[in-house]
Amino acid sequence: MALVTVLPLSTASSVLAAQAPRTETLDSLGVAESNEDQSTGLSVEAHTSERNESGSLLSVTWSVKNNGNREVFVDWLTGNSYMYSMTAYFSGVTAISSDGSNRYHPVMDGENDCLCSGKLSIDFKENIGPGEQVAYWSMYSVPEDVDAITLEIPGFEPIEDIPIS
Image 1 (cartoon, one colour):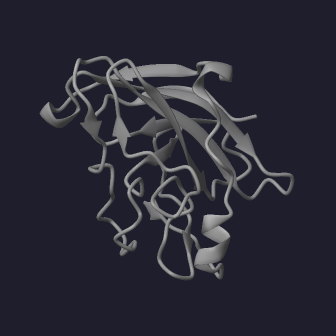
Image 2: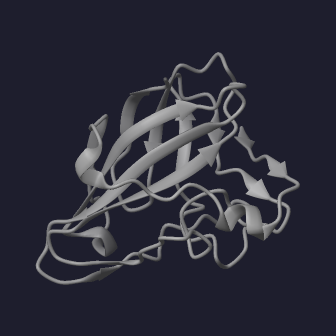
């Protein structure tokens, strides 16, 4: 079952969304390696999975690390399950309930942008240099009874059993 939430937010609210944190200050909740040609030489890591105060939204911070020797343009993480705008670069990053019964797509605002890192974020970075690790974020509407997720990032193995705090 797929679930998307549309919020009546403006593009300005997406622009003012939280800046991506620096990866050197983040813990690791799991790492996954490439499983497709386009992501060869890259790995992804989950860092945080936190609910907002009301418990209705889940913010996940994750990163991409370039383990190769050339700069990589990361633009293929889009999703095609819903009609996100063309600027929704990371709309394909999905969360799955720990029992595998539900898939959650990033929350969509009133202008079809996902509440996730992307061209509307203040500090969006789409080119990742050799040895560089860049943090991104995604926002989901996940029921309060879900206490762990699996994060699926296109081009990578799933990161399983990420606890929600």
